[in-house]
Image (tube, rainbow over all chains, first blue to last red):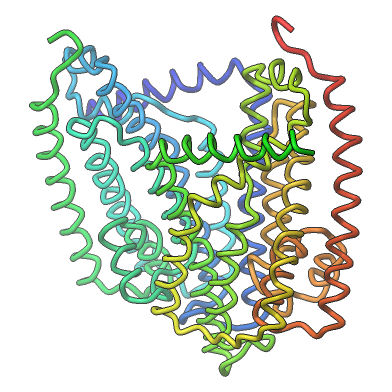
Length: 261
Length: 267
């Protein structure tokens, strides 16, 4: 699988690059811990007044925060930096070099930058998930764990396809880094279950910016509240979006006129 | 004094002109500043509905009113000087700024005011939109409206001076992100952004009353909603004035100490 081989390669390059700045490690740990502390303290304030929020108990929302960090970490680790560099390369024409390489260009632009410090967020996400799993106790069995794994995979594919489609618009619109920034501020909304939002916002967070699939659905799966048909539907949506992103990417490449032509 | 007025006027003009050049940035910023209060509005309305209609004296429609007003007040008092300072220090821009004959805080205040002028119509439209969607419970009173204006001006000045002083940290360390994040956390929890003061746990309420942050956002919001007694309003103005004097004194001292530390390539 050339995808995993390339991902491993670029991850190693990323680590080597950042090893030159070891003091950054503590600074990034501090940043991530502060963000996590803010999220958990916010939950504490809310759950001082209520036992459930839109049907979610506090342990389940802690799990949701774990998923939020995990998915956000993965996005910041490879997806976002890669896509940002893609829009940059389209603008200044350096995508020529990538297209000339023998590997599939879509795979290359998806993994060519790895922001290694975001591993901290991924690790924190896993830690929070582990803690909330312990507190949720026996209600999480093999079935729930399997549907969680499936849901997070489906969510990951949807988020990746979404980012690729956004970044690919750069072939027509050239300056799209601002569109990418919008995702960042909307992603914040995923710290709470999308079911509490009013209909129009819930629709937007499900289909316009697919925060629901990336965060809410996996967290729901953990407490066994996602039915098999719903999961299958999400998987079908993920497959369709992935295919659409691939076709759109091809169109973009055809549209691209490099720096030299 | 005339010179200072001219400076403000000119800075305001150039500020507005340059804001209008970066329209996409404006849109992004607007989405963020509407979405955040909207999230807390929804969270707290949900909580109040599920716990029998009210939390800490706020029903769902009271929360809607609170967060719509908070969105406007937050926008009116918001600053981004910490990012500017980080950039200015890294790029050595203070070499030129320090040669200016007036204190640099004036140019920053005027620049900040120009952004308010540009964003105000959008925020007003967003507030109307949210009002249609969430049916807030407003109880309008002339006395509260009259007291609101000076409270908002004091809140703006206080928040600006506090932010500007915190931003001076960029003179001392290159790792200002952690300091900024701690500052944002303090603002989030103590200013009334995460929840109205009455809803916060008791220790946080006490801390919020002592610290300056509540007086920059939560106080004007509660005042506008008519939730404060005349005595509370008076002591609120006292806290604002006291903190404003303290902040100005600290700023003066910290600015002098910071400038002494400044060195730039070529300076």
